Length: 375
Image 1 (cartoon, rainbow, N blue to C red):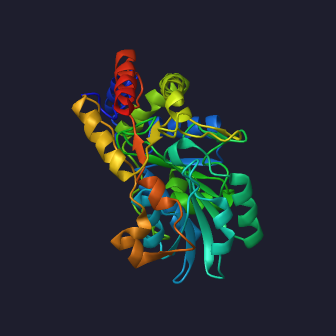
Image 2 (cartoon, rainbow, N blue to C red):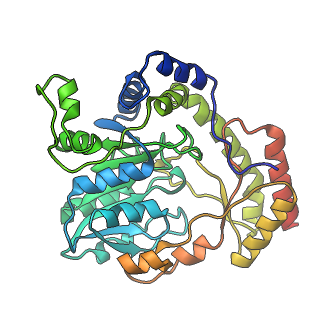
């Protein structure tokens, strides 16, 4: 069976983990964490990067930094993972879902302004498949209405919009380094802080509400509990695993892009025949080959496709079920306007196997079996 995902391994992970053990420092914020922070800040041009225990906890921190109050609303797409919404709800905000664009599966920037009320405090954008939302328009709307922008760039490490790395455009950016992502630490993520006035509080939230980071820098003579917070620091063992991959990030990027391009070339004739739709990459965007998906005629055809591919030894999966139609989505939010594309497009989309060092014979097998299905 060709797996949908294989966690990336570049070769130096074990040596780095052994080094962390030998240094007798396996809890958070050691040398490997600091090197990951430096890489993210230098590579992506981030103001401040802080590793977290997951992409979800990065979102949690971003929402807490927004300081929502009862009745405040946030605008977000319904086509996203539950973490995007849960983090907002935990911070006290109400959810206002808007429709997506069928070409990129990202939130439709033209639907945002009409969903804004006097209670709206933030917009959460989700860069689906590592392809940027239309950030120029979104940032202009946010500035006009004095809204914060949180980028859920869980899938977007190394992707750009008009030359700027995703996660560094809004007020806060949130990355995921889950085992399914391009760069992995098993479980982990990072919060990118693009406004310096939030850095100190972010460090406090991340250190269980204490000013411990300032203490270790020698800025205070003792550390104490000063705010709310939680334990958002990942282990040095996780950071060591991640650093090995960040140091070879371009190699991973090039490898995945090669696989993505082979899929695109293989399935372009099917798209031209109207049998499938393939990903659309707007001219302002450079993606990171996080995933390759096909869009089929409807839910019935997709179900048959997944079963057929499974029978041919290929694991293909569908993705998000729209949040606004879920029990929690109905409880904690509402859909603004008409669901023209969110449900329809989500029921058509299927993801193909995609991972670092995918062998050519496996790529060939996937493409051959996809073509056989449509014949």
